[in-house]
Image 1 (cartoon, rainbow, N blue to C red):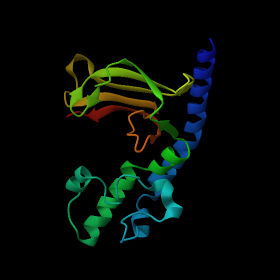
Image 2: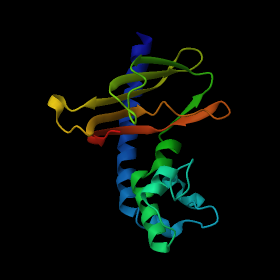
Image 3: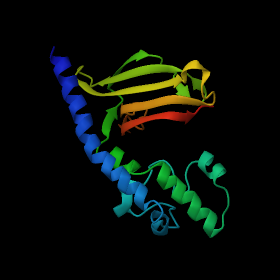
Image 4: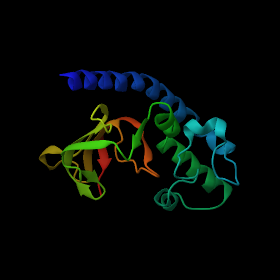
Length: 191
C-alpha cells in the first residue's frame, strides 16, 4: 500500500515536470535556428549558459547518423545540420538537468513486458520499467511501446510512445541521468 502511494506521487511529479518541460521544449523549438550562431567552434558545443539546449554525448553537429543525414562542411551545410540537431533534441539538457532523475549502479530495476521493444531494429512490444533505490523505495518509471499499425496500414510506420523517465541511460562510473520524456508518435518510421 505504501509503494502504491509513492508511485501515485511519482506520477503527479511526472505531470508537474511536464508542465515545465513542454513550454521549455516549445521555446527550444522556436529558437533552434538561432542556437547554431552561439556554438563555440573549438568545442563545437553551446556555451555553458545555454546548457539546457546541449546534448551531453554529442557536439552541435550531432551523432554520426545525424551527420550522415546532414553532410557537408561549408557554412550553410553546418548551419542546417546544427539547426536540425537542436530541433530534434530541443531542451535535451533541461530534460536531463532540471526534470531528469539520477540513476545509480546500486538502484534496482523491475521490468514487465518486452524490454527488446524498439523501432530500430523493429521489434514490436510494450515495456514498463520501474526503478527502485537500493532499499526498495520507488524512484521513477518508464513506459515504452512500439506497436504496428492495425490492419496492415502504414507498413513503414509504427505507433511509438515514451512516457516517464528514460530508464535506459548508461551509468558511467556508477551514475547516470534518466531524462524526462512524454512522447507519443503515431507515425514513427520503423527500420
